[in-house]
Image (cartoon, rainbow, N blue to C red; front, side):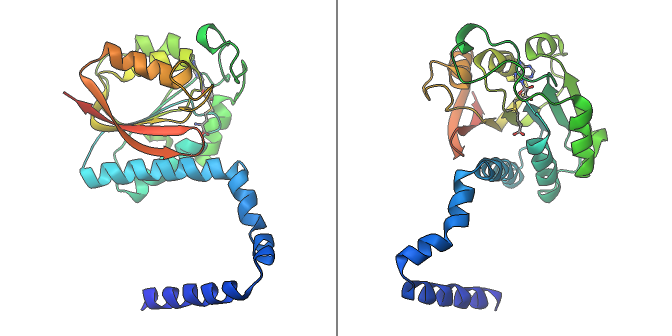
Length: 242
Ligand SMILES: C[S@@+](CC[C@H](N)C(=O)[O-])C[C@H]1O[C@@H](n2cnc3c(N)ncnc32)[C@H](O)[C@@H]1O
């Protein structure tokens, strides 16, 4: 019944739009085009990616924690928390890592790229306030503040299993310790998301792509299966262990 109604509405709109001059239709599409070109598209696309990662874990019964490396003001964390509710992961924990001072000093292979020291700076208290505003249950969060190369190597081995890892730290130098931390913690079938896969010149000589190809060379027991691409820079993979 519901489907019939929506099909009828769709076909009525289709019929009407065929009688309108294309120039006028283009005018009507301006707000949509604006959204596609604006940052909203990025927001929507990462929310869609996170939703898909949770749907995939739900349907394949892949269990573990959600980990996010680079959280800024908490937008993607909030999306992940909401998705955990929608897909029925009431016990999932959220491992959160950020300097809460923005990007580190740009050094080594990241020099000359598009990123700037201190960019995306948001204090931990502002981040937590944003989470509370969207009713996230902070008792399920383990927040580690500090630069990754200082915090991640000192964390106890085997402290958690991770089913979804969202890497959004822009730089090669930041991604290296993140992947090292994930090596023994990603469960078989986990979703590994890179928000900045196609930054720099889009190839694997820089950024997250370079860190990932070096990590795979060091860890022949890990194979990545292509999964979803999202917005202009993001890519994701499924982790297969042999
Ligand atoms: C683009 S923002 C993250 C955006 C967030 N995921 C979102 O979509 O709303 C990048 C974040 O990575 C963090 N970051 C980058 N490199 C880091 C490092 N080496 N150590 C700690 N945090 C880092 C920055 O502080 C910043 O919050």
